[in-house]
Image 1 (spheres, helix red, strand yellow):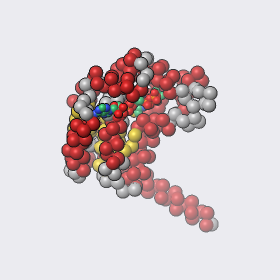
Image 2 (tube, rainbow, N blue to C red):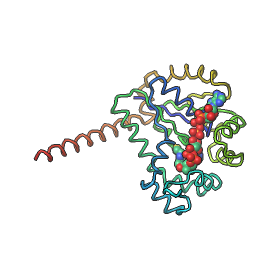
Image 3 (cartoon, rainbow, N blue to C red):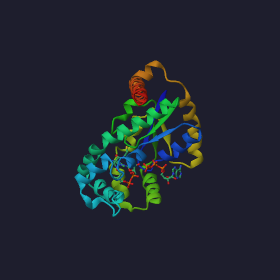
Image 4 (cartoon, protein in one colour):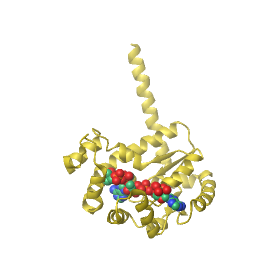
Length: 236
Ligand SMILES: CC(C)(COP(=O)(O)OP(=O)(O)OC[C@H]1O[C@@H](n2cnc3c(N)ncnc32)[C@H](O)[C@@H]1O)[C@@H](O)C(=O)NCCC(=O)NCCS
Ligand SMILES: Nc1ncnc2c1ncn2[C@@H]1O[C@H](COP(=O)(O)OP(=O)(O)OP(=O)(O)O)[C@@H](O)[C@H]1O
């Protein structure tokens, strides 16, 4: 199995590239969606965040007011680090389960779309690492056009992340998304060909996917044993 890392900056085009992978039947685990789940009302992450940031970050229905929490953490690096530390274990666990489910289903290639792949040190588990790059001005313009949240908020969000040029330096494959959608599709064709090749054994172990495979095998073995035990005791 190959776990491909897909990262970049906010609004650099990760979801657009994810959609191209999905249209080629390659499943994508989206860290932003996992992060949303771990903040759902009543979940472990929600309880920690409410205890730390207070009930003023909640909507009337008890869900987290995401724009409000966003304003707080994207304008204050300490609070953002604090939130990251609170949620990181829940997000990593959520991603692990999503990958495990796809591994059990027998998928040979899985893409992890994680905006903070390097910051969260998840790059260790992925090979190759694809960085979707755009120049800073295009990034801001696309972010403003998409989120309509104002220039200050947009710049705060961009500045909250590792600079895209640094991420580009850490990539195995760079997709330059400064051009048109057609341009992106053309680059994607080459990337897809590269990603579909099998990993060599050295790449497999160096990227720690061997560790994941062992962990996944043990976990699914334990789950099967628990199920068998439950069935057995029900019969008794
Ligand atoms: C602060 C929150 C509530 C704001 O929610 P909002 O709906 O406005 O934004 P959304 O979640 O859609 O994120 C949009 C983009 O912001 C960037 N981003 C999100 N969290 C962070 C962060 N902690 N640091 C830097 N960039 C971030 C990512 O590029 C992401 O794609 C939310 O982003 C959040 O819970 N962040 C912490 C969890 C996290 O680290 N998520 C990233 C997954 S790796
Ligand atoms: N090549 C392109 N030309 C024009 N617009 C583009 C191009 N690629 C992406 N976009 C647009 O830019 C915006 C950001 O793209 P996308 O949502 O894919 O970024 P993202 O990296 O997933 O963002 P986030 O980190 O916030 O999840 C979207 O509105 C998308 O339609």
